[in-house]
Image (tube, rainbow, N blue to C red):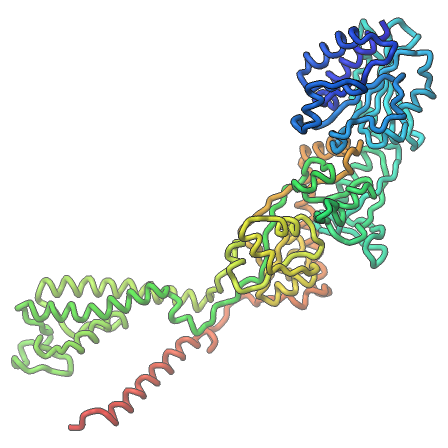
Length: 635
């Protein structure tokens, strides 16, 4: 009955605990005291058939179809439970978990003990606190007791007990009549209180997510946290889970990228080698999940780039900017052809063209060059073409028409000139009042095709890994000419013009309002419209860390409470208010150009295009005068 009860409890445990429910079960070979037929009947039927998950029998001479499939890599394992009898000589083995699944993030060990007389607290402590279980997520033991018939007790390993040392903790009891008495959640029971344990976390300065003050100039030292997103999360976690913490930087002052040998640099490498308990804000990427375990993402952040805001267009272009080059070409072509078309109409129509004013006073056949009366035969081709330009300059036409065809053509032409000149004047006034700006770059394709320089931070994080490993043509093209600088140097290059700085959008929003805006929150820096590589930020833990789930639940509570959005809004506002209060003494205030607002009079600068046209006209008239003097006909 003792074996049956223990197997029954183990079955209920694996079916009820969410940490174990979907794990691959690896069953140890039975010892000499256990009937193999009874074991198969109670274990395989309840676990393998009811749960429908891969079950592997491990040990000398034990091979199974699923075991072979695991070795061949045909079964994907998310977590695994190694089930062993306490009487097995497992301490002398090479591995508790088969080598095929050692890379998983959640490994569990469940001991079954059917000899209560040998299951004192010393034996339980020896089993559950063994160094061989150092990287195991949960270490549990089920043992029969002598207090009541059929009762089974469950113990678990406590990494940070009230004594601040690794020990054992009684979790629950099971009886055939009532089942589990407390029905505890193992993870919550063992990892909901760390009893003041001091965690070491590694991170990098990246406001508004992480902000701190260095205690030494060299990277790798302990830091003093300042108000920021992840520091707020860390303080809330320390309060709820009862732990203390030490923050420090990675020794190489990098976020971390993948090396050819499979190892990582920076923060990722520090966690991969378990040189710290966890890292704070870290971008969740596919490559990094093979090295560390991430919590759920608490913030989704896209990348973008910033540039200096475009300056006003040269004012000498003001007279031609109201229309595009295509519009000017069409306008010139239509004007050139309008004169010949009207000339053809004049020659083909029998109607007489003359002015109504004093038409009866002047004799026929005599043209008055003062413009009082003009006969159709007196209108030369050149004069007619010049007359067609008059409506464009706001001047009336010197002749009246009697033919219907001529009236229709000139009516449409005058209406066309009225609309064109009205639109031109309106745009010209608007352009002189509010000068236009140079074209902007808003996409990576436009940036890659431009003649400016671009770069990113020299902390070599997920942004560096993206451009370095990507096969997307635009990413590859940008990486070939990528520059790497610190934050301050990058922003100074942006302010000088001709440089684009690539990084995360919220990071840009924070540093712009904090360091590169004036008291009116005006800035010379703009964020591009395109957003790319949207990634989640989370905390990372070493593979197999037992703390991940506790922090994961905490992140879920913080997200559902809406604290992340509210905290980010508060932090951006605090950065803006702090920059406003210190504008007069800020080190970056000298590089922020403040534009004077209000009514401004037109200066020679605004009207330089008009003067250029006048000078050009005078020069052309002078050249024509010289040509007429030397080459013109003399009467």
